[in-house]
Length: 240
Ligand SMILES: [Zn+2]
Ligand SMILES: [Zn+2]
Image 1 (cartoon, helix red, strand yellow):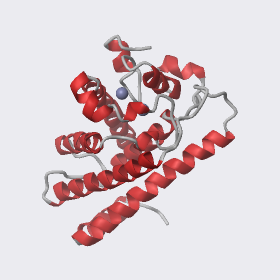
Image 2: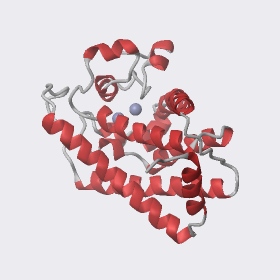
Image 3: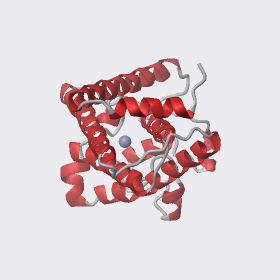
């Protein structure tokens, strides 16, 4: 089947007709699936990758972390529903463009802008007062495991989501770009919390936020606040 723009807007029309109960079920199932995908990908890379561990031991997987990770899935679903609400009320408009050039450009813009926004919010999350109630939980994982990406205070999860929704309100991105960006974000977060280097060492020189880069942040909390790239850390002299 040849996927074209008319078909994509057809799918958008279908989603437009979803009732709220349908949206709630859809967002919960989608986010649960993405959570399982992340865990599956993590375990797959960890089992097949031959590179040595970054830290001697993985952080132990605990029951409270498991429950918190499920709460994160719930919060992500909530963010998705807020996004749908904004879309239905025309605060967010999406395009059904399928030109490869535009999509690549939009994904790059989303990655760079979100990286910059996350840099500032992450830096702020390390201010003592905010750190204690919000971000400290994530840093209980000095080493990491397959749940680390989802061990976040609910406000952090919702904060990240709202940041993205604000960006989507400022510019009409295409559905394809938003979906690709979100998938990259999930895969990046998963790989970034591996306890093994995944990227070749030279990637660091290309300003890419590698696994070692984020692992270093878990070891030294005053460095490496960026996520997808090391650009902002190098610029603001917090790079290690
Ligand atoms: Zn982390
Ligand atoms: Zn941090």
